[in-house]
Image: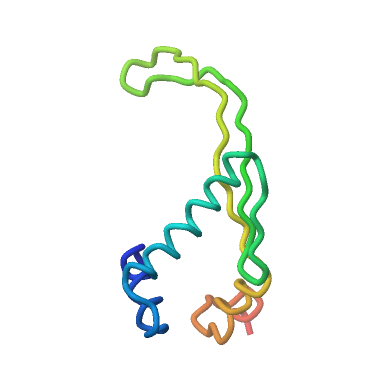
Amino acid sequence: MTRAELIEELARRNPHLLQRDAEAIVSTVFEEITAALSRGDRVELRGFGAFTTKSRQPRIGRNPRTGEAVPVAAKRLPFFKAGKELRERINRGSKTAKPSQAERTV
């Protein structure tokens, strides 16, 4: 689902909202999550998951084309951990999983 599709779905499910209002809501939510992560805060959406940042230490990398050593600066990366309810909803009724080794040998 793209951002535009999310806005369309929000407007469709809430006919009292104008398209621009739905767009403002989605933009505000994303901006607030981004701002909180930039401050180093954790964002938890109960039943959905948690957004955090992970720090990467500076290191020496390699240029894949030349093999030359290149310094890579320290950085923070966003990280998402799905909540229990989201995992359960995704896996509910999932009968397409591969059988385990024990099931195949029976």
